[in-house]
Image (cartoon, rainbow, N blue to C red; front, side, top):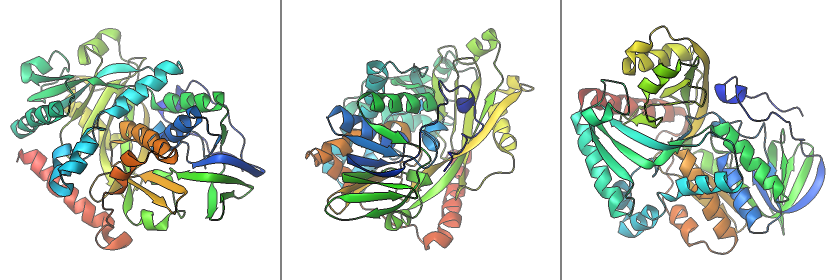
Length: 427
């Protein structure tokens, strides 16, 4: 089977490498078999390989083919639901445990980049931008909440302060997270894959898994081969179909869209984001943007529930960009693409085991870059017999969407319309 070509994104066009790894042929054995070469799978495989396990990764398409290689590339701490929400719904013990892990993913990313010298244009600093007074009050509360869990790298910005960081009149203020940042996500996936191979791991592309067979050891089957392993990690997220049907009923693929402009003149780029931080606003259907290493504006936003392809990505995103930066009118868009993330009903990730030897993690609900790297670390801990942190996530209830597969898209879109209206009205 031949691997798919990467989507025609800016990331694919500026990737450090484009070598194709072979597909799995024949039978082999490994300590660990990881299904999926996105950030969850790669982080799991890398942490396990660092612990001395023999690791084999099976990828249906290419390394970083899904959300991991197509996203906005922003390091955003925390989860899609904040710690106060977790405490309200699941209790203080769970909130304290998850709060203790909420800021770890960014450190894992930086450790991997530094240790393996991965060239992925990693830059520090991320801003949450408030579009109205209500959102500004919420950012003030977020700062207090995060600082109560030991995260002290936060700086509240007034509207005037924020103009020194973002050349836009759109915002009432913001919260600067000095431990946030941004990077080239596809190049990070490729660098993590190289790191796994440097530790003796094997990675096969164009090797979609068709069946997982339980037994004394678990046997993972592709169309042209199999891997027998002591443990299996299922990490397909929004691009996984058929392997774990019970889990797939509890999540929904959603599409988000991104454009990338032509390279901007140096003075325009410098004026746009003078400190080269990334930005996301505080709306429910949020906008997010940053500069690339070659001074392009990467701008994303919007959600298509059910992961339907929009007719025109530019017609959806360019008006958002011009609302934020009207002075960019006429700037050429060189790339436009979409990619899928996985939404859960409670917007919290779903971790779990099937039997004693199959682990899964999915459903980061738009906050995947840091959470996936954390997931890989806690999965590796659990496989090594230290499951306390994994079990915090695995203990969260996992609910199906109301109405099942047929109605989950319209129900969720209706809810999104409601919250979008609240954002517009500032209530």
